[in-house]
Length: 289
Image 1 (cartoon, rainbow, N blue to C red):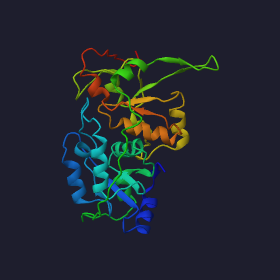
Image 2 (cartoon, rainbow, N blue to C red):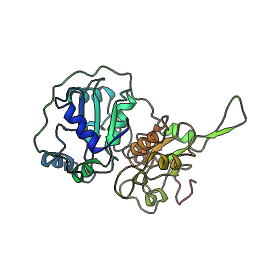
Image 3 (cartoon, rainbow, N blue to C red):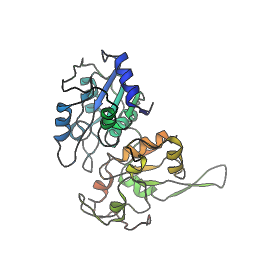
Image 4 (cartoon, rainbow, N blue to C red):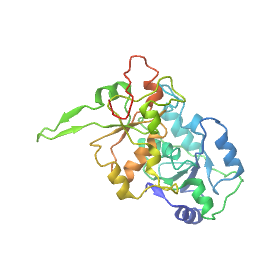
């Protein structure tokens, strides 16, 4: 399960009202106001949902960029505090088309927890569907999440530099395959027309631009699988995805998963890491460079 509809989630909450096998996580967040998500949760949230702070609980460890991954032990400790163990079904939602909830989705899958989904359409779709909301904080029974070896499916800046646009040959045929690096930011940031946050404008040389917002239709729901399959059809094996700080890149990885691409990798430091290193090359314009 990768995406779940509001009505399907409502039915699942009703079946599992105790929360013993289902944990719903509210991951609403604003980059310009780090307390905004918590205030939204306190005002109204999906019944039984628990708030997870992206800035302090889904980021914050050593490493480059604005939102480096936390130490994996800190993450599993947070899961335990939310009553999540390896047998728990987790559903994450936000108010940003899944762009933030996908970070929790990806982090769970990175440690081998595959029973996780993102609410399609997020909190706005839940409200439009006329489903109940509450301001009452959810109760939780903490548990212990077992140790995991570490994050999987990540690459660092040096690996991106080696792989961007690189060509490899198969051992049994003459077919060549290219490691595709995908920039999930908006087109204007990819081109270098504007850069509202990071010190340098542009993109990683060799990267193509597939903005994460284009994974959604005009109503804020994910495009159907056949459209996403067509969108990501030419990426080749094990594509690498980055964005500004490693958050919304996870939305492209989520959409790739819907399209059947399950070997995508995340560059957690993303452009905020790359652009802070003066020796790293930068490309501008529409072409990968």
